[in-house]
Image (cartoon, rainbow, N blue to C red):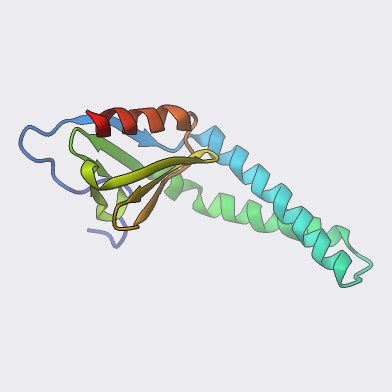
Length: 144
């Protein structure tokens, strides 16, 4: 077993069934990277302007390069992540196993869905093309 598994590795209980699976959407990933690049570019330029650097434009180049490199480097891992929603649990990468009764809050954070347990653990199902549908699936199965 690798140190970090990208898909659920927990065995299903007898009679347990997967209701839905959630994978990252490629276009949503790159759209989010583009927005992150815009923010990084503006922040880099603002910092250089604030310290009086006459070459403010280099903040934009640095921000774009940083997020572009991050997006390229993390892409294969992010696209390989899968979450499975069963009739009893939410199963995620790296052995995450969240009983539905332990889920306290489900909310949208941009293209991600944040799941917060009663114990305070927070999990992100990232880069979802339709985060509202993911939330609806979680609420439907959790409530049923």
